[in-house]
Structures are given as structure tokens and as C-alpha cells.
Amino acid sequence: MVYRWMYISRATTSEGSLDDVGIYLKSRGRNRDLCITGFLHRECDHYAQYIEGETESILRLRSLIMQDPRHTDLRILAQGVMTPRLFAGWEMAYASRGALGFSEFHRDLGRKRDLSVATLSETLCYMQMATADGQAVDVMRRFPDRRRM
Image (cartoon, rainbow, N blue to C red; front, side, top):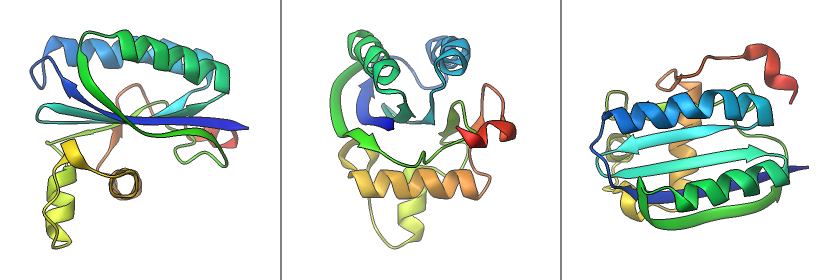
């Protein structure tokens, strides 16, 4: 079974800062070692992250994220068991305002949406489009052979 957890939080650091880079670099080994896949989006003052993997691994990572001072006002959008993985093969897909951002994606659909108040379905729709459309990159590396997870 795959456990998922998704949240939106307000960032306490500047967009594109060394703290942002630190999040990605620290995630590299941990996600690979724990077989966690997912998507991280940074837009202005907010993060949206979706992670999936074994329950114990996700709960451990969730605890670390909730204690991380780089996040505040964390709002959980989804958690629990689901199948199959939505981001199999992506140790951590990433998109920022440099790519087609969440707000721009929804504006192109004729909707004015802000990431800080986004719903689960709006956020997942954006994340899945970004990975399918080549808007997202895997800052750790793309592992197509891990699609079997």
C-alpha cells in the first residue's frame, strides 16, 4: 500500500534562497533511501508538496516537515492510503514560478486561483499537468527505471 501526504505551507525564507536549495539537496538521499516519490512546488511565499511511499517513511518525513522552521501555517490537503503512486519515477519533481506556475496554469483555464487557498484537486491537477507537460524537473534526477515502485 502507498501512503500519501499533501500540504500547503507558508515559507519563512525567500524564494530561490539557499534554504530552498538545502531542502532539495537534503531530500535527495532521503527520498531515494526511503523510496519516497512526489512533487514540490514553490510559488511566492508558499510551498505545496505531495509525497507518497510506505506509511512509516511518510509519517517520519511528515513529522520532520512539520517541525521545520522554514514552514509555517501548514495546511494538510490529503493524507492516507491510496494506490497507485501518482508520481512514480520522480524522487522529487519540482516546479517554481520559472516554469508554468500554479496561478498561471489556472489563469489560462479562466480561473483566478492563489496557491495559498488551493484545494486538493486544483493542486494535484496542476502537479500532474506539470510532470506530463515537461514543466516540472526532478531536481535530484529523473529515474525512469523506478516506475515499478
